[in-house]
Length: 136
Image (tube, helix red, strand yellow):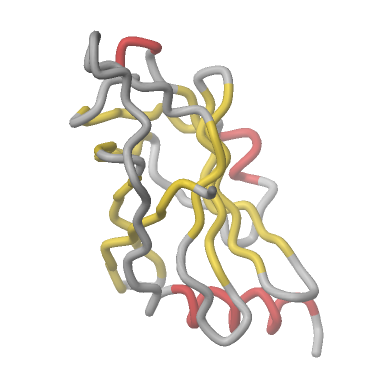
């Protein structure tokens, strides 16, 4: 199967992704948490979304057994790292331009609570809510 067809098949499978959650690791005394880490969707026919949050950057890829395609890469303010936060991420348009499945959004809103990242994913006229749970 050619790389474009593989990426497209992966995307279509991931548009049906359902929720995956984890337990909160918040600091009970301050109520703040670090968002840094890896977040995963549930696997669907061997495909899943993986988000890595590190140093104020959110990077999301669409992965299957044989490929990985960038869907989102963007920065966010450090002040967003609090449970129950709405995070606005500014797109790294240069990185997204190089990806066939890269989002065309200039910004993306994420909700972060209890080790779960949620966002809307729009592609080819279809919008889905995506939920990724913290790995571990």
